[in-house]
Amino acid sequence: MSRKIFSIVAIITIYMFLDGIGVFAGDRFTDNSDGTVTDHELGLMWSQTDNQGNISWKEANQWIKYTFPDTLEKRYDDWRLPTLKELQSLYVNDKDYKGYKANCSQRVKIVSIIRLTCGWVWTSEKKSITARLYNFNRGYHYTERMVRKRGYRVLPVRDLK
Image (tube, rainbow, N blue to C red; front, side, top):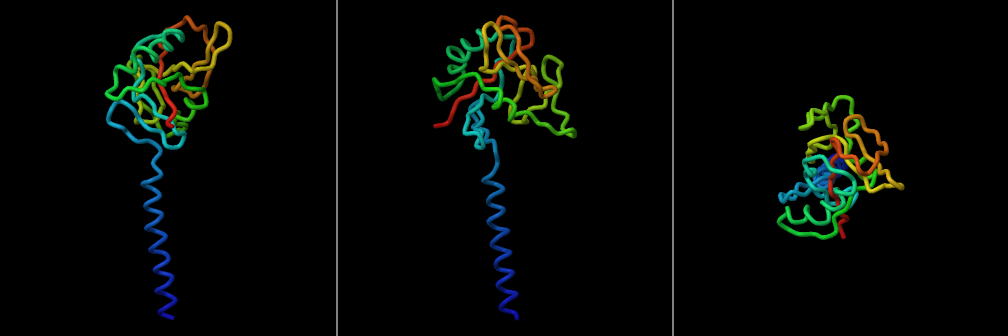
């Protein structure tokens, strides 16, 4: 009988140890300590902050291509605008999570490792003269003319290879 109990205790101990390792290894985001965040779930690298000012969709593309890479210690030339689905994955849809107040006085509900100065972020999705924005205050998306910039931000992302 004691051998059976020992086996059960050993199995439970091993399971708890392996489960604990999984918790630590399963963290979705890692702060790279260089202004970027690795998203292990989606295989992406995000900027840890937005561009910190009003920007149109066309200006956002230019900023990502020509300005943003020079703000980081390690240069990557493959930054881009995120898709709607990628941005939606950063929204915290929890009624108990209040988020934080961004510089533009809007409450933002995004994962805490990423900081936005305003909650409207451009996506890569465009059609004719409009492009899609994602609202991190309420978790919805809509289209806007690409030339508009009031409170709109860009959050660069790149694929990990």
